Structures are given as C-alpha cells and as structure tokens.
Image (cartoon, rainbow, N blue to C red; front, top):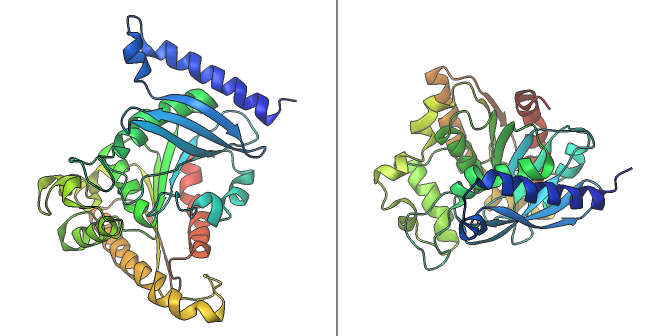
Length: 325
C-alpha cells in the first residue's frame, strides 16, 4: 500500500517532470524558473496535505490546502477562503467541517491560503497596504496546471467562495466561460459594480486598510463592469451555478449559544443581510436571462460557519454532478 507521504513524494516528482515537459523546447532556464511550480509538499493527514506553489504572478510562494479522495483520478473543486484569506486562522480547514463532508466524495478540494481583502482579482495599481496582487492570474492560469500535474486529476474543475470570495468565484467563472463546470457563491455578493457592488467591494477593501481605487480604478471605470457577474451573466450559460444566502437573523442553523446571539446578530447578521440582498439581485438577473441556476435562500442564518457548512453540503447537488464526482 502506498503511504500518504510516499504518494506526495511521488506526485511531487511527477509534477516537476510534467512542468519541465510543458515548458517546451528552447525555453531558457530563466524563463523556466518563472513558471508556476511546486516547491514543497507536506502531509497533514492521510487525505490532507499542503502544497506550496511558487507564483510568478504574485511573486511569492502560496500554500494550498488540498483534500484528496481515496480513489483514482478525480476532478478538482477550488474552494476559496473568506475576507482574510485564511491567514488569520479562520478558514475552511480550521473553522468548518468540510474535511468530514468531503471524506466520501471523489473530488480534490484545493484552497489557497492568502488573498486577504483582495477580492481575488488582478489589481491594476500598487496599493501601499496589500501591494499589487494578481490572484486572478494565479487561480485561473497558474495553479490548475500545477495541481493537475501533481495530483493526476481529470482536468475538470469547479470553483466556489464564501463571504468575500463568493462573488469573485462567480466572476472568474463568468470571465472565463467554459473554464469551470460549476461555480458556487456561499453568503457573498455576486455584484461588482453600480451602487450595490461598489459599496460592498469598497467596504471589503477598506476593512483591510486598502484602497479600492487601486484595484480597478475609481468607481464607474469600465473595469468595474468588466468584473461584474451582473454584466457578464450571459457568459454563465452552460455552467452549473449554485447561490446561497440567509436572512441575517440568527437561528437554529447557526447553533449560536444564547449569550452570543446579540453580537452575532449585529455583526454577522448585518453582513449576511447584505449578502442576501446581493445574492437575490444576482439570482433575479440569471432568471431574467433564462440561465439555469439553483438558489438556496435560508430563512435564518447570520454569516456563521455552521451556516456555511450547510450551504456547502446543499450545494453538492449542483456541484457534484457537474464535476462527475
């Protein structure tokens, strides 16, 4: 039987060989060094590992938490973290029961660590607080080929996000039609321009001390609309779309102790209510365009990880079949 560590060592070697082969004849060593590549692998459990990938777009190494199935080649679900990108310890890995949920699913689940307050996009200008991240390039162009080579995937992908990353997950699916078989938004805002989209994106960036003008220019610049799922919704025809949000009112789904109900209602409840408005607006846009989608709207729920766990589990009826998982 191949041990988890043995598997990881073997896949690292496969990834290195595959990347050298795909570099092409005549590529200089300097150019080859600028290819996205695996630079480290660590086994956490039998099914969970950390794969470090050097990203030329970001100019640094990104740690990606990976859940692997027990069977053979599988599709990949890129599942993004929330507003702080998991660097604060609040993440799918640490805060949810996602590892247990995916234990019997034939799918790789890949979650990058980082991207806080970035909206997982390519920033047009350097920001004094978060620099000039290029997460779209990393997520769409750099990471998938590396993961495919390292894990021997089927090459079929889906993407999902929670809270801050939910809208960007839908955006990436809309900006690159056909790249993802499915996309999911969990308690986020798939609106990125106009008064609603501008307000929510500005609030996210400001909460991290960054300036949203450095992302796509000032509000009203055409680049905001170029990243807005509301504007790009027509590109999602043929993609399995799952949307989820709740009212913002704490309830049984949150499983919050009574002494914490008020702070949860004021904090998470307010955020969830805004997400609910965004999600309903986008769902109506898809309906108006005749684009198939599923929208789970929960009568209670206040932006808690217990709510996100429920949204993730319910979304598999959409994501799983689209991936063939």
